[in-house]
Amino acid sequence: MEEPILFLCLILQKLGIPSGEYFYHHADKYGILAKIFAPHMVYGYFISILLIVLAILGTRKMEFIPSGLQNFWEFVLEALYNFTYENVPHGEDGKPNIVPLVYPLIVMFALFILFSNFIGLIPGCTCPTANLNVTLGLTLITIIYYHLLGLRFRGLGYFKSFMGPMIWLAPLMIPTEIFSHIGRIISLSVRLFGNMMSKELLLGLLTFLAGPFFAPLPIMCLGVLVAFVQMLIFIVLSLAYFAGAVEEEH
Image (cartoon, rainbow, N blue to C red; front, top):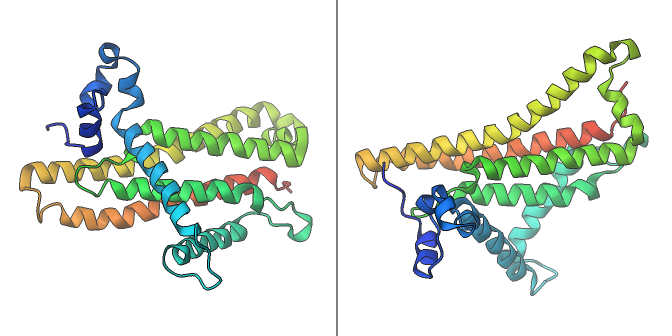
């Protein structure tokens, strides 16, 4: 199957910047720029800039009764806040309130992943989350951050959770817990990557074999649902890991 035509990469090529699948896979020949401007990186930059621009446009003229883009952002942010509040400790029953610490990260995850998933449905664009490097990077942020939360709220006692309920079980529980946390990395990154990559491959194959019009339409409609569900799964699991890291085990 031929290399897909990616508009942003073509523009960069016209500017003399090695950008595209061919340059990325021959980075030893074309240098570090071929990796910096790989397709998944280029569209990741684009989505980041797009979100910043939309945020500025939605907040530059704040109104008491919101409308337009401000109304959209208030709805999205309030929905994500309520979802975060319901799924992590928020100060009840003597538990710590970690909502202010995890809410900004969840907003970033939700918006970046959702826009990344959706942009792959636009002809001439590619889905950044269909690349394992992107999903692994997002996953490592979650993994490192929930360990930091555990250390902040539970101190060195956080590591007791790796040893099991009884000290004599530690030789058995420590390797089990380590493999469990490694499994979380694989689960978060590969699930998102696999679903987005399979959607990209199906769209490419249907377009190549059956034409660019009606044949890919069912997969594109299904891709809208998959894009939203995969974003939701990622933030739900992240919230579960954040909550589990700060809550005392019984």
